[in-house]
Image (tube, rainbow, N blue to C red; front, side):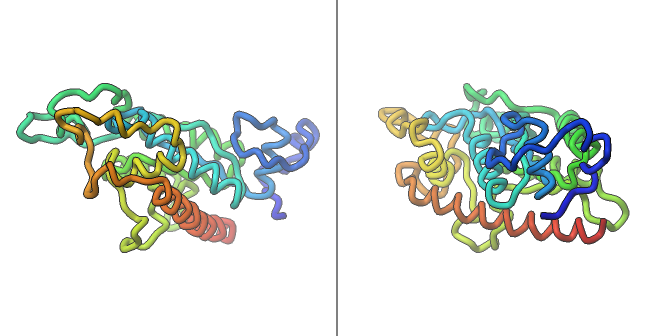
Length: 267
């Protein structure tokens, strides 16, 4: 076990006795002594990012959050660290098309889709998430990992802005930003994304099968309302969702562990 010196001050040692190592990874379920024990072993905090957003009639609003949160917890169980509560505010693109100017998937429906309660201006998001990160770093965490299940380019740029704030000169940032499939090669069959389509619906059929109802699209004029998918939603299946999740966990572990090792070596 590599002790994290940031948590080993005499004041902390005197005031907050370590408790036995806990297999629980969610910070809100851990006592301070348990958090210290987990961060002594691997000083990483994960922040899941996502949306409360329309994902078709057949999926729950929390698709992006569920993906990010479950990935963070799976990685933390294998690699170490603690998982913070998810942040559901997110950025999205403004799109001009035949329906006029709308944001996100509203542009493909032509009206505000019920359930999309997530959009936050980028400067606000950057400041807000940076404040959470700063809290974690100031209290001794060595690395903060942002894992996002909402994948438009503007969201990635927002996360990178946060990471850049915690980068000094040419040294590595103490913040990593990842989309769910960033740990895979671009040509991997599991390095893909859509919106409420075959991919995301399969993911939910694996993670939260009781929340998916494909029959909600039956007898609807536009079965793909607010859906972006290269393959029909009706082909979605839990087996593909499980394979995606398994590969994403492995890819993220490899990327995070490599960065963490480099960060510790330059400290």
